[in-house]
Amino acid sequence: MQMLPVLVNAAIGAEWQPVSHAEARESQIMSYASVEVNSSVAENKLLAESPEPSTCFDSSSTQCSGKDTILFKLETAEEIDRKHQQDSDLSVQMLKEFLEDVDPSQYFLPPKLLLRYALLLDIVKPTSRRSMCFTKGYGSYIEGTGSVLQTAEDVQIENVFKSLNNLPPEEKIAKLSTLKLRYFTPREIANLQGFPPEFEFPEKITVKQRYRLLGNSLNVHVVAKLLTVLCESFGSTSNSRQ
Image 1 (spheres, rainbow, N blue to C red):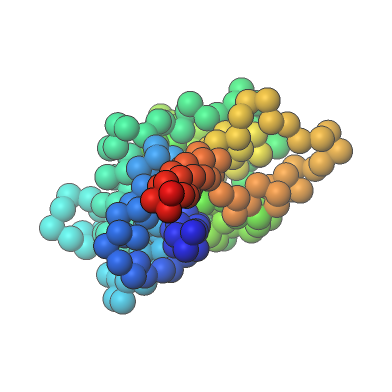
Image 2 (tube, rainbow, N blue to C red):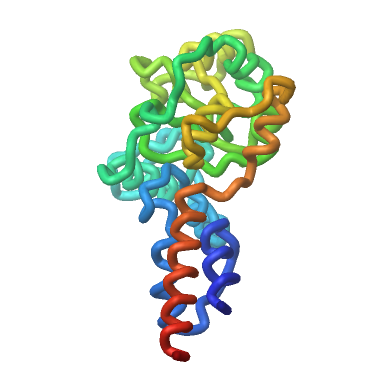
């Protein structure tokens, strides 16, 4: 049963070091992508440890690598490549499969947040196959709390961000507003985390409270994998002792 700390740490994206090849093999199934979950927790942890990332700012159209991708936000070439690879993984469902038909008006990002945090947003589309981990600060804080959804799919995000240079605040807000960025709803986050359709919050729980309750939760499918591995391991150990 010593496997439990190793597998749980891998599931939540914490820093860990396998102490044997056997443990390393067991932990491989805990990658969110390997269980077809639209989350980049493990990859984000790896990026945070990058010693000297080469970052390009929005004021430059310089290519940071030999590839054709032009960086237009506060992102590294490695981040752009990672996101492209994740969105190209056909084994993972598109985000649109987890979205609900809802009035988006109450979930749109307010203008002051667009203006201040635009370059820090992790923006995904319904056709994306990835998202950041949603934390309990989602909906209240911007940086590092989760992805936001671009609902105006016909608008090219690159063109919007590259046109922001030297514009007054009012015009920047107008440009960014064309993307129609909104927060994911609590129900959509629950869907992404593997909660069943019949799962519901009591009506008295506010939207902010729902975000806090869902934030940093383990994915239901990942927990199921954990329990399966633990039960199989326990069964093998019991049989070997008989």
